[in-house]
Image 1 (cartoon, rainbow, N blue to C red):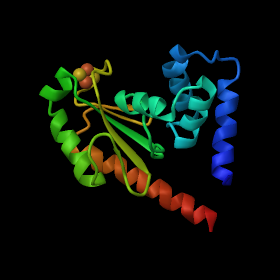
Image 2: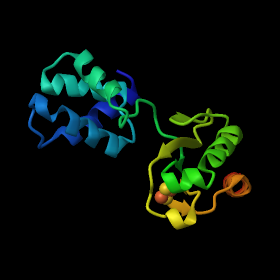
Image 3: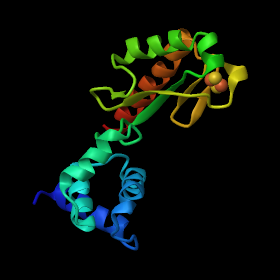
Image 4: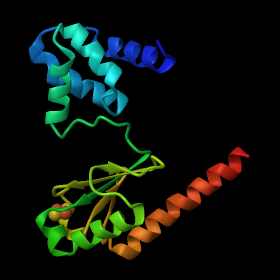
Length: 167
Ligand code: FES
């Protein structure tokens, strides 16, 4: 067993402690694992199948059926572009296109350097600031393509600074 496998299985066992091993608990269990680990690693799903005493494929089917579950590790930063009505009307799709072009990924994807996740969300309740993007936990209002460039530039500068400090 690799270190990674052992580590994920151990973390999963801790998460499963105190949860009943009934099949109805499958979805809440997967939600809890995702909350703790950020995604559903294959080793965690195998551990869940063993715990609930059901076939691996049943766990995998549920995990792939619901799009609330992610099967790959999340990027370091999350970009969520609001596509609610107000944001759409104010050009949310232009903002989304700007993120897609700059990051070279589509919604639901993670950049190859694992720095950013891009997702679409429904109204986040800040319509007066439309078009809105939520960057990590910060709401960015009037997020037009120029703002998108500015946000990415500040992350790039921050990353360069961190690298400098490491060396
Ligand atoms: S529609 Fe985007 S914040 Fe409401």
